[in-house]
Length: 349
Image: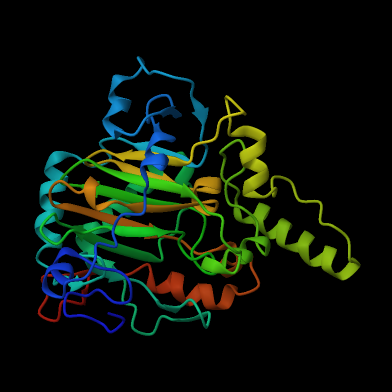
């Protein structure tokens, strides 16, 4: 079971293909009935979370039931692409070869090669992104929470019912991937399920978040490079003088959660269900990005779904950070877009 399998799964992760062919148990379910009973559903309209499990309940807005809670760190932009753009985008995506991935998924990944355990990154083979996706990155500038966003990884994922596709709960690595994680959903509505992370800071390199400032302020404005540089300098000075740095808006995600997350402070969700409407853009940041694991349940894939997820660098690798020289090379490669219809598949525009 712990050897790589032809379907793309390895370790304890499974899909319907290996479960049937090799008689493996279903490892896709990580939610109990008790979890479901305590779940909340995020409403993209009022941006509050309401008691319930069925994600479509948000469409009853403003006629919600129960007592809501605030849940910062989630932004949903409906109709981020048009129906025509979706059709053209999917046609082009399917003209590029898919690679097998785990838990029944297929993927197309563009970005530097990262070893999260050894904390090494290589961008020699990173040649940028397919040109048919450029308009998506260009459109990020229309979303205030994505101000100044610089894509350094783009990953297309395909989920199908036939393969029993899902993705286990996780937090995107915090050593090199930055705060904001945008995802464009295509073909069908779906749901992202979040559960509170209670593990050690060594997992997902979460401890690294103590070494760099947040990008988003508590008022949801975006810090500029000068702000980040000033905070890095304050950190450096505090280390030299052994004093606590006086950094505005650099409270922990947990402190953010206790300060501003709750309408009813006696209630906290055990699970949060975030709708991902077809053609919408979901952005995770702040507490939702760092304090909660996110995943997609097999039961929430009812037809073929394709999504494109983007990542940025942590401030450590931006020009204001201590590893700006490494980040500079990655950002340079990220400016390239290539024509997928060229003979080599990598022809620059």
